Amino acid sequence: MDIRGFLLFWSVLSAIVAALSLGPSFAHVLESVPRLTRWSPSLWRETTVFNAQFQFFAIVGAPLDAAAIVCPGLLAWMLRSDRPVFWWVLAATVLYLMALVAWFTLVKPANDVLATWVPGPIPDNFETIRSRWETGHMVVTGFKAVGFIALAIGLLSIRRG
Image 1 (cartoon, rainbow, N blue to C red):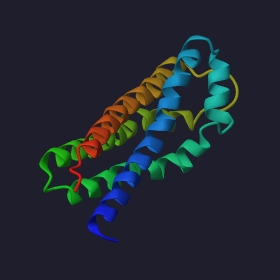
Image 2: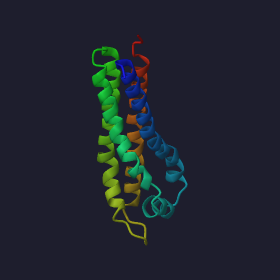
Image 3: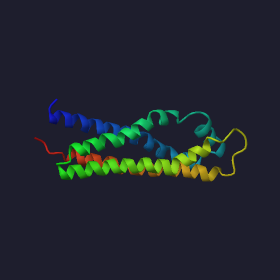
Image 4: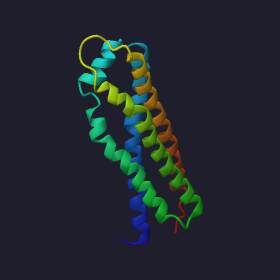
């Protein structure tokens, strides 16, 4: 494979992985309005905590989130001589990294509390944990969306020839 083919492969792979990482995060945002405004606390807890609704978000999403940092990072390194493109792709890498940091900072602590909940009365800290979990996913999505835009601009700016 020549260098252009190699670059094309990594460009497409980076775009696909970044899009697949953004997708589940965006799904969380789309779900958030009814989950925050219409669902009862017991329905929210039942679906979020007890019935594995988000099981595949972890099984599939976690590797995708890591790959959404590694693939554009490698692509940025390959494009280091094309400065404008390099900076856009590096920005995408950093933004996806920031999304992961935000997930560990905002969502994981809420997940840790959710893991302790058991059927029965709604916990006293329900509103705090639900708000942290939902808004944490919104912050993560924001970083990923801006990262995806930066990646798209970078990929569209690669010199042809």
